[in-house]
Length: 259
Image (cartoon, rainbow, N blue to C red):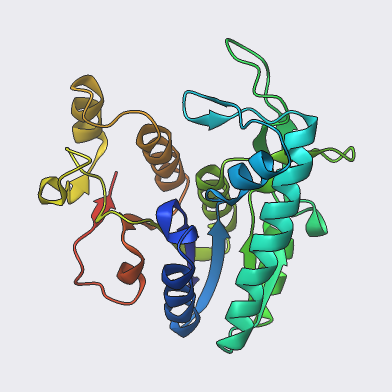
């Protein structure tokens, strides 16, 4: 029987709010069992880009990563944020190890092929080194992944953290019973993004098709959910989306995704 492992992705405004992030990390540290944390970059990278006299470039809600931007997001994601998060977990007696995809060759990616839009040094994940990650978690280490991967030829790549979480879950599911949890400031997937009373508590393939057709699930939430279903089809046991508190309170309302 496989051991259980939870992969938690934290993002949204939670990562931008110091107090909210500290509270979340305290709760995460208290989670029993094997676990992995994946974090996005929040607004700090855009702020740093502006502070250095450059202008953040976004198309369809996604960052365009030119060479200068890649240097900055690497410093912020893999350095400032990743190490602060790791240090905070150590304070809470969680023996965390901060990682990018280049460390121990854990996540291999390729530069996104240019179609309609050139996103620059954006990376799409090719492979997850589940063998190495298994060694880490089985030796009482908690990996903390930032949103930076590599291509195996010395090139770092900026990669969507939601995608990293799903690909990690998919890759490591051959060794563990994986629960994938996406945490952000909302209760879960909302029919009306401004009204938490419109929480969609369960989504399966049939309802997803309806929500896409009716444009209820659109923009940034759509690729997140599609990644989740890809993970479920590849052996991940469970996927939930909700507020950070859901990791310690199963009774808190959230969205559950099922096949």
